[in-house]
Image (cartoon, rainbow, N blue to C red; front, side):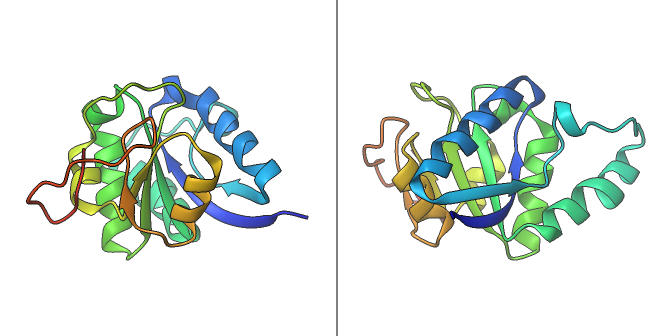
Length: 155
């Protein structure tokens, strides 16, 4: 039986299918994922931004042991993704960026650049290591990033 982790996966809704791919990648390697994020199969009808943040997203992020940001070209422009990352950082969550499957490289959300503990390519072992506490920054192909003079070392 695989080890199971409670996670919140921050993403833009066009990437909903990628969440299943991520879970399917990790399960054969021994890690099951219980995901508290909001996606097509678990959508809500709320429209008040404050209500969504305080009554839907915050409790879901608080429940999770690890916060994952699914990185695609659209995530950098999402105010919701940046808010979720900042909220997770304030709660002391481990923050892991995972490059979208097949992604060649794109800009990261600004909050991910600031708060991520790890950003890894589409490799099950690297993702599991990052979830379990290994820090590091990778390009989408799994290669090392050039270090830059920031708090973290994004690509």
